[in-house]
Image 1: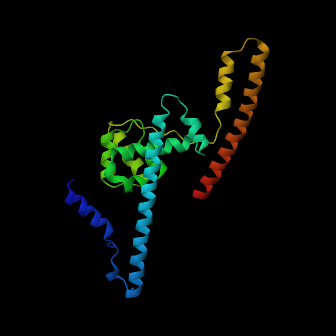
Image 2: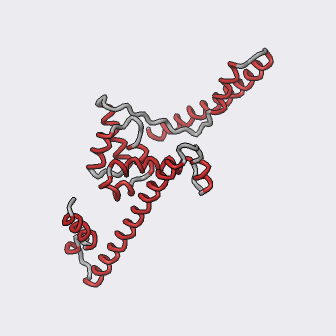
Image 3: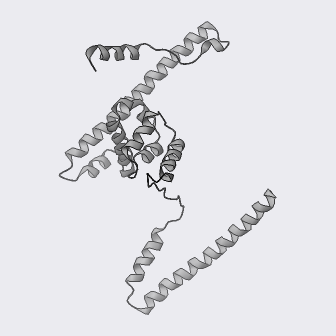
Length: 219
């Protein structure tokens, strides 16, 4: 962009034009001025948030590169009150900021879920680009579009089902089975499995009862 183009962009940012059609509604002139002024304040606030989020993502990326050789980035961000999930979210958003520099405000407005969907390892750049260029921000809409791409055989995209069950105990039990050295250990594990099976049967029965109850209501 040349100097005149840059100047035009600056002018556009400074001149506020409301997108709301005030003429179609019965609103007093003094109220219109107040609403327009409020809109402008909101816009500036949103832009400030957008810039802040961009700065956070950029700074974190730059700092992570400084710790690349030592591998102490985790210690640093933990000392600054951040955790692994925070860093993952900021890193994913940075990917989008970096790929679509002209869409900073849109990327800032995306929910963490939308960012996660767009930066999924099986989502290609071209797929992301189509969604971003269409200014699509709702996570649910993005998910539907990605599923559509998957149905066309272009994309392998799998959502892990949400579960409230802690599967770590079962994984540990499986690992322990491979390390069993005597019948006593095996008997202990079998006892645990029997208890789990008993609870599962009870839960299954509750589910069946609830299904019957709901079927009767629907009929």
